[in-house]
Length: 311
Ligand SMILES: NC(=O)c1ccc[n+]([C@@H]2O[C@H](COP(=O)([O-])OP(=O)(O)OC[C@H]3O[C@@H](n4cnc5c(N)ncnc54)[C@H](OP(=O)(O)O)[C@@H]3O)[C@@H](O)[C@H]2O)c1
Image: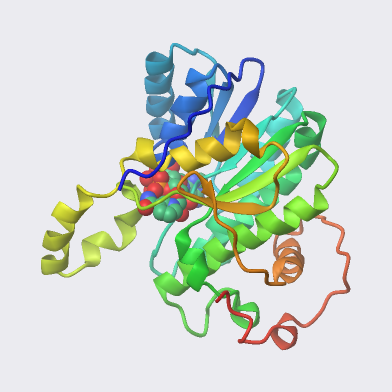
């Protein structure tokens, strides 16, 4: 079950890597790997206490003192803008941006701006953050943007007529939508960044023993939790789960690829669907990211039909 391992020996001295949600799980393991490679590593986290503890551990294990923590709550567009401004003003370069943070199958919660929580955190927050940092990424080219999506995107649908799922919320439907949005955003971004030296990768990390199940696992029936305990021993460790992210972030063989989706440290092509542009337009409207729209604004509900599902 371990899957493959990133074998690249690339060193990252002089490079800066920013990872969202790096205080635990896959993000923390990815940050540790980047620190081992000699990068300046920025952990962008919402819980500063946990972030500082993680940074201390990473400095200690890697021997790299150049690990810093910054506040980022992806459920607040103001927090996203504040950190993006801080990074633009204080960092000379940004070589690798890893959009890793995520929330899965929570109850129907709202972000500070009133968006459905999973779409807001997993997609919209990262969408705005990435767009605000594009100039710095271009200035640092060749640079990379890595988006941690999920296999769950394959059953996803973008509900353009009810993007916050107000009419019919289900935790899994919302998670799938947000993870499909990750992949579509990656593809559209890659198209827009052609020729800039900034390349984009999205991925499924595998099934990994992390805190991601915190919102649904405790609510499972007792017998399901009992069955899940031995199964949990079979799934990937966070180190194993971080390998595809690390591969996309550093592997030399991917330098000229962009806009593709990876699984198990391998390319895993997805079907061609044409939702990218629609999603980007909608997301720019929702976050007022100031992205130049190349098609006129439309009634998304009418334009998008239910047949345009992923599979
Ligand atoms: N684990 C799996 O099996 C699996 C499978 C497929 C895809 N993924 C994807 O992998 C990524 C990492 O997940 P993980 O498994 O490492 O889960 P995790 O252990 O729960 O870590 C998630 C990270 O995201 C952060 N986060 C959540 N909401 C945030 C917000 N509003 N603002 C900023 N940070 C926030 C968390 O911070 P706090 O600690 O403060 O909550 C934590 O650092 C996610 O995008 C997930 O969808 C995981």
